[in-house]
Length: 65
Image (tube, rainbow, N blue to C red; front, side, top):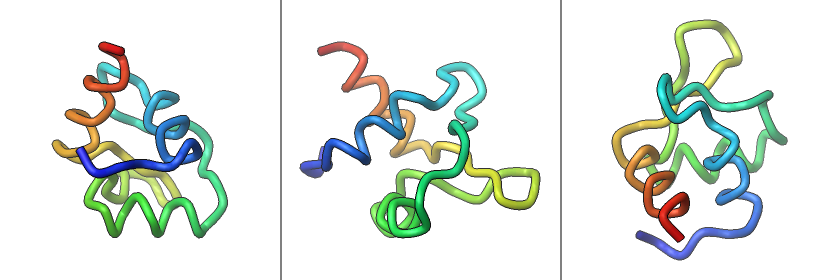
């Protein structure tokens, strides 16, 4: 896993582990960073985000620590 910032880790950890839906949208810069890293994709609703397979893997790694 790429070295993630505290903010990136926190946002991934706040995502629902079952659906992958992420919590309330963070600042735009954080969305862009996580999207550029391939961790999130646009969700089914406007303005929503969902963990990508890479984001789910990163979340699982963080939860195992």
